[in-house]
Image 1 (cartoon, rainbow over the protein chains, first blue to last red):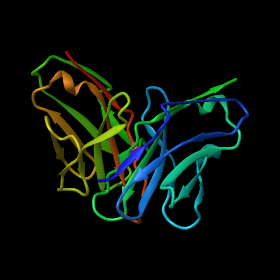
Image 2: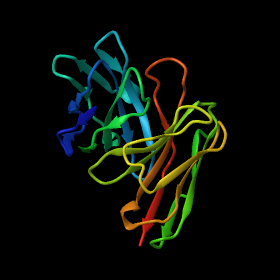
Image 3: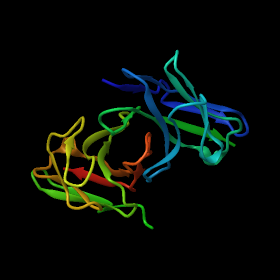
Image 4: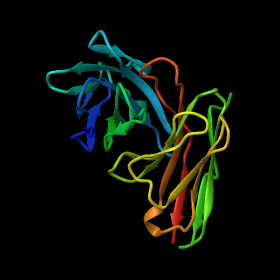
Length: 114
Length: 114
């Protein structure tokens, strides 16, 4: 069975500082990895994905994520946080074969202080 | 191009009542999904439909049924609502073509069962 862990319920960072939201996964085989963001009372929005190739992937709104196969991690990063980045962030994994549905982590609330 | 739409946005039911949540997408996607979101648990897959005419159970299918009415529409039915089904329900869709395709989410239905 596949699983995703987001070890931090909340991350606090000052505006302008770099941010990291952590994600580790457990699957048998090579996964596809995703990050989504959810603003209050809204659905999830796709941020970025890792399929293959370069371990550093860039996505929407200046976010990027680094795939580390040996540590089974896919941490989300941004060099300079904005107050508007405050939201709930979800990491998700999908196997390359079989069922297409995503398995999500429990989410990390990012709070960026002015 | 509305993306993924869901109706209703809010619903209050009494225990034992039934209802159907509607979902439609206008992106010509083959696959559609129903998730529920509960605090601290991320999103959990209820049912999915890989293509028109097929449906499969996800992680938490008990108490729900689905219908893939056509390529655009995928409904979720609660036959006899229970308080444990109080949650926010999200519909999503994705394209079958290519690999590692992301899912697009609707705005959600907030359901309370008393």
